[in-house]
Image (cartoon, rainbow, N blue to C red):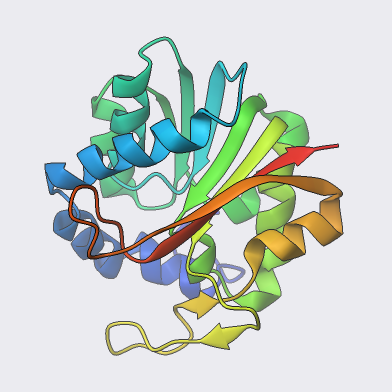
Length: 210
């Protein structure tokens, strides 16, 4: 979908444009890569035989860098809506990075991976568009699906940097399990005051196709 397309969602335009560029600039801290390395080491210890991984919404590649450091043999693929961020991630030369919206992905037309995941991405998708996001995420996975997002037992909208309808909390994993017959493998929470590898109070869920 091209910028300014009449079918582009408000959220897609928000992240494709200047706000997305600013977000990319704010998230250049290498400490995030170290925290992600610890996070993915824990998650992937519960997901044997993963050789290929696809990330939906990779931004500038902090997760990709952590995964590559964890195991340089991983075949990494990523999709990112913001062109500035996608170029930075692609220039790392560790993953095949595509610039585009995950809402426009057709899993039947692209290569799948052993693990497909999002981290801080589903929270920024409008509820009306979540089914398309879920379909892309599960469709790109051959075995495992991982979501690392803000959890809330019931859907709630949270103001985000002065904007409304840009951040939502809900039980993403629960909805995925109900809709796509996925089994829960493991889950965990990473506190922002963790003394070694803090994250932004994120809850992760590792799911497996039955």
